[in-house]
Length: 311
Image 1 (cartoon, one colour):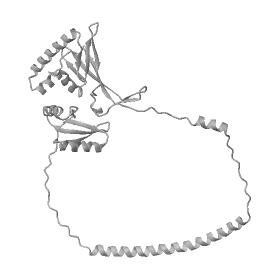
Image 2: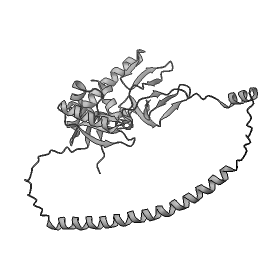
Image 3: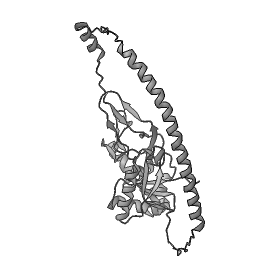
Image 4: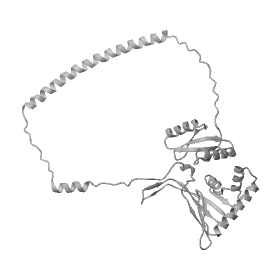
């Protein structure tokens, strides 16, 4: 039994997954962060920790295993207990327990359990598709000091040039004013003639248009009715194929999945503005989990299950 696979599935939806008589894996959401030393941007995520004091069986893990493997609840508890005895024997022998995509557990010299989480997988579904990236450092060039240094070596001065005024320019200015006043009066008369002509032409065009509208006859033949059989997907269990910042990429992914035979569709954007694409949606959780396992094996091992809350 791959116990870590079941635990990993549950960590997407729950903040505490308990292994009876062994301990509990806990998740805590942390905000996006920036490493000033390396200029690395980290997306929001869930940090996984382990608490060996929480060992009470809450039934969550056993119910999930029973649903997936189609076995009774008691049988699932027995399988978990058998696995726990094996894990404890490995720890007492000094071996390191590796839970894939979760972390590693060892015994220290004082007999205490130490947990080292792995960060290969982000269990915060709202951050699906967001990865860390490194931005180049911003370099600023100072030009002020260079300009001041140049100014000290080569002083710049501006000397106003004196020009002699010529008398003939005065007469030219008087003549220009006279011509402008005469042209302004002629221009006003010409503009008034154009406006009058435009008003007459507009009235004639309006009368012609009214006459044509009154004489026109419209004959609209009814179109034949078309019946379309459309199957609308419903359900709150969605198998997510990806999330995209650009909606065009989301549409492209839907077309690709439909070409592969899946009933793919867009299920909206999350609170980070990422457009999500689902392979399919299901009413039953068991049907969704079965389909998810098949898709992980045959098409996309990074697919995951999104459960929307009922309104």
